[in-house]
Length: 137
Image 1: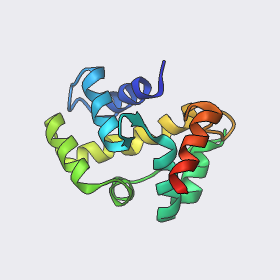
Image 2: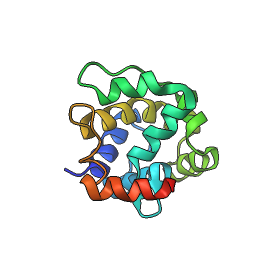
Image 3: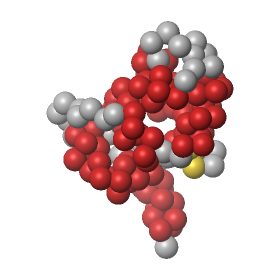
């Protein structure tokens, strides 16, 4: 199962019955929230969260132990507020419900996509890492 589909399934199960969208619709919403163009950018989201003061929280998601919780407000502080508003409207739910679902889905999504603390496979191996590095230079 690819990361985007896994994330959509996690989001669906964590929306508490709201936004009963199919996997494609939820994948599209995740793509808009945590995407970079036409690619899912989990590594970029992780970097943004680390820079936003959540390094220890995200570190727990990358490690093999238990995942520390993140609040909807912490996610709102890192993700674009306009994207959150648009995604909630597209789902037919309110922002707080979406953020609550994301606060449960994102840690699990990062945890499952990182083996032993590495997102290398999740970002497309060494080529993906090189492409990400190019963005910084």
